[in-house]
Length: 103
Image 1 (cartoon, one colour):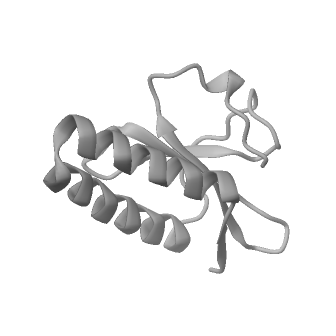
Image 2 (cartoon, rainbow, N blue to C red):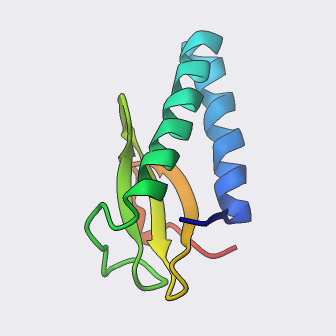
């Protein structure tokens, strides 16, 4: 399935990598990044995973945990054109309702 990453997804990615490198070390940051890429591939093959969060906009947003790093969630949706859009990658411990998906 085709996929696209929103600009905010890429900004989140850079922020999370920097945070992990600074707080947990380069090895952990690298493992997280590899797990993120593997999880993205999994979602592309299984685009309807996750439970839709009706409290998030736009409609259809589903979170899915990053493999081996369950604290982080990838927020994605499938468009009517059968394309997976990756909106955000953030810690699931934050207030997700205030998280803006569009950028």
